[in-house]
Structures are given as structure tokens and as C-alpha cells.
Image (cartoon, rainbow, N blue to C red; front, side, top):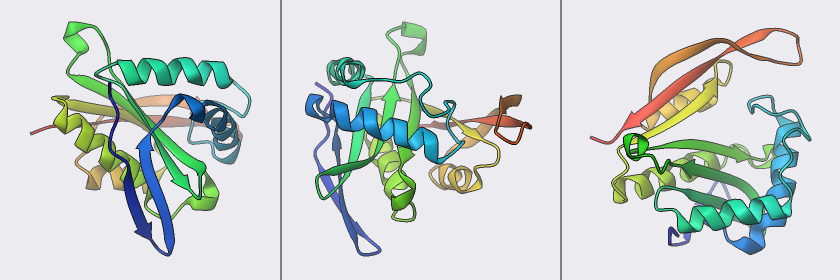
Length: 182
């Protein structure tokens, strides 16, 4: 069972908790992901694309709880899920040492260190569970996220050129970043 102990944060006057996602969170996560996709172009999906409903999230959470190399975290303010992150590993032996990280926080709650703390809790979890590498992808224009990742030990490992086409019709690079546990 891959569950972390709930942690509480108080930053800029906002109190929030980070904890492992549980099955009852599925509907809120489905709604949250849909909202996130409509608030920023930093994700792969446009709003409504690759929609994951309550059942889809229930299955994902169940897999994450049972897998030693997956973890899904939620950030909660006043019993409302306002952000989440996920590390997904592989059952393949050659890839078992690493996980892929993704994160999203609704715009209303940007600036409270929520994304940073979701990542830090994920790093702590990975380090404690013998996961050597955390990999992630970030859009070249997302300077704030890139600076955060670098501050937490991630380095650019590669660039996928003209990887995403955004609403302005232009193509943008995706940066592949990784953090290796020393």
C-alpha cells in the first residue's frame, strides 16, 4: 500500500493539507482535471479532451494505492481538492528505478507553494522508496515551473522541438527534466 502520512502547510495565510488520494476523491479529481485543462495551456490536453470520469479516476487511484512505484497526492483546502500530483512508475525491470511526475493546481490557488509542496512530498516519497529518478516534462514557456524544478534538483535532459501547438497557432518546445537521487 503506497499511502503517505497527511501533511499540513500554512503559507501566505492559507492552510492546506497534502495527502494520498483515496477512492472517494475520484469525482472531485475528475472535476478538477477538467477545470485545470481549461485554465492553462501548460498541459497536453484541451478542456474535455481525454476526459477521465469518476470510474476512470477510481481505477487509477486503486492502481496507485496497490503499486509500489505509483503515488497520487491531493492538496486540500477546507475539504476541497484544489490540486493534485502523480508519480507513475513502470513494472518493467529496466525502468523500475524511475517515475514520471505530473502536477496541477487550480489558478485560484497559485502562489501558495502548493505545486512545490506536492513535488517535495513526491521527492521525499521517491527517496524513501528507493526510486532513483524522477522525470517530468514542462513547456518551454512555463518559466515559473522550470525555475521551481531546477531549485529542487531537476536538470534539463533534452528538448522536444516544436512539440506542442497552442491556441496562438505557434509551436512550442517541451523540456524533459530529471532529478537523480544522489
